[in-house]
Length: 78
Image (cartoon, rainbow, N blue to C red; front, side):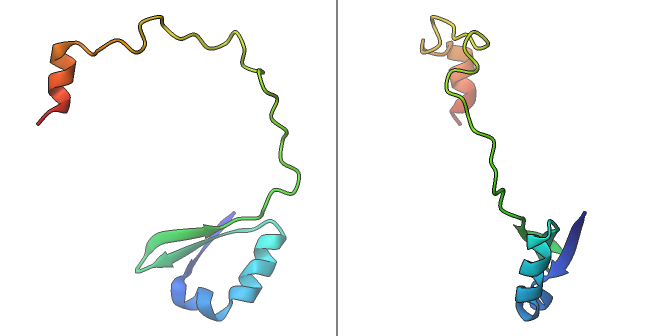
């Protein structure tokens, strides 16, 4: 569950917020009702990435770096 706290409250209670986050809670800090930051716990046991684990699942077209057709290229120009 994410809790929203305005920036003024966060300044006053920062240590307590860090304690809550360390117990697994997520805190969103808001300013004028708009989310500006999120405090989340650090993952102490990240999943190890295995190089090459997607081998055979991704294909790249032989012409992936060919110039774009003129009509598509024109849509990027203003």
